[in-house]
Length: 256
Image 1 (cartoon, rainbow, N blue to C red):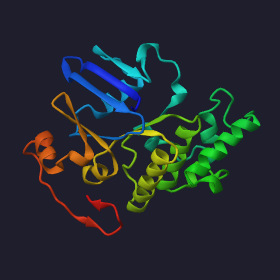
Image 2: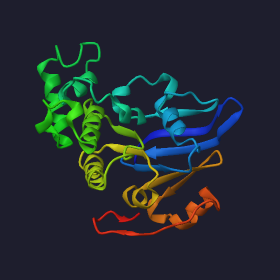
Image 3: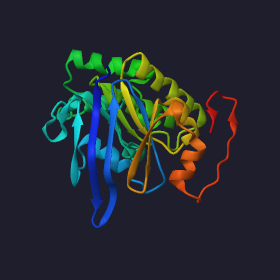
Image 4: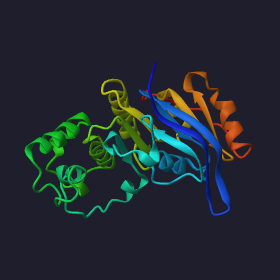
């Protein structure tokens, strides 16, 4: 039986008088690749931040690796790529290895003073994402897809058991998206990392994940992706303010 990595029970959360999550329960199992979808303002990022402990629920409990979140301390098991990485200062004079090294020793001043074993961890993370040849390059000189891989490597450097990602594909071209999903497959199936990802690209992500969390009207609806009728699901969560356009990508991504 698979272990539960994240368990949420009867979660409620409000911003002021606006309740955005209402009596929500869910779980994420070891080995899952979970896609989180829903209209703008449906609290997708809020749900992710609650799982990470960046926000506290008004009611209910969240457990990580079998331990209540308010007691959990082993955060090296968790990797997180926020939306803020897209706003990274392009002129910041740091190399790829320095950016990743910060996540190991944030108080040591970039890559200076890192011990040999920590350098090995950086090199390993870069190799996993296919960026080991760019370790000495300045981060500002990389393409959007390359930067994305660097920030994935930064999240991987502490060997997390689960990786949370908040819309990592915004502003990334089609080739980089294909490379991204290939990398996710490697992380999930070869390295055993559970994945939780917010996405607006419903047609693609529904074919890549094994579980979908649909957010709408303060609720979370959980589906196994193979048993999910995406057309009907979309109509339910987006109501009548949508039209569905199915089109084929010869690139191998499937319908989008």
